[in-house]
Image (cartoon, rainbow, N blue to C red; front, top):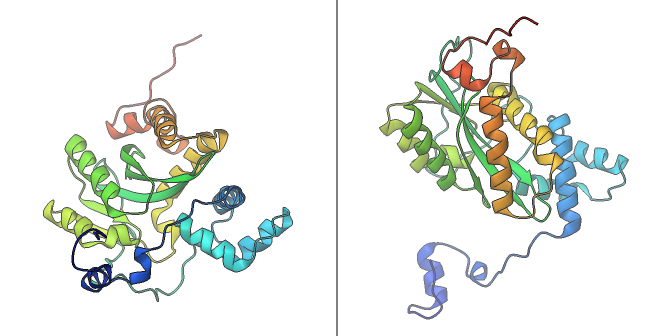
Amino acid sequence: MTDRAHEPSLTRQAELLGISRGSLYYEPRPVGEADLRLMRRIDELHKDCPFAGSRMMKGLLRQEGFTAGRLHVATLMRTMGIEALYRRPNTSKPAPGHKVYPYLLRKLAVTRSNQVWAMDITYIPMARGFVYLVAVVDWFSRKVLAWRLSVTLETGPCLEALNEAMARYGKPEIMNTDQGSQFTSIDFTKALKDAEILIGMDGKGAWRDNVFVERLWRTIKYEEVYLRADDSVTAARESLGRYLKFYNTRRPHSSLDGRTPDQAYLNTPRPIPAAA
């Protein structure tokens, strides 16, 4: 958005954009190997102890020999886009111009495909670096309808996944997300309103409001991500693509009476095994 070779000066360009002049000269440094190892372990512990904030996380890490202080742990957790998940009063304020919508699924019986979709973002560690995975999930069948990988936590990949899901599967009656800035953004909520989809959002930090997506992240990480060490975004995209195809088409779910998400989405009964 700024250009050193053109008028006006960088100082004036920063003023017009409403940003700090110092930010124009800052070049972000890549995350070091030690921090990448620490972030990987934080992610694993977060799956096992989703209620752990930075203080408890620091203690859990120290039990394993890590020496990072609480502030450093908190910084890495923010970078990863994770926080302690528990119900508490919602004292957070959305970004300017962003509206937070009420939770719509309490006491709602979800009985069919495309009644409710959910979207969320999770951190994906690699051998060197990390990416973020956003997915659109059908609440009834657990089917992953669309997904994207991104190197940043931005709205664009969320809109791409949403548009792909609607192009392939129609639209839901309700879209449920958390209160992340990507989902409260004007562009994202406008896309839902234009499609006449009701917008629902989890309570701040209330992981049970979106429990099926949290279970999906746990499944993906323990059955695929943590078993590999992809060394590039391309490799991570390919391995996740293979796994999500398996997840939708072949992986039986006990909560779906042994059916796969594809079978549940299409309301196909579980095949009866042939007699021996």
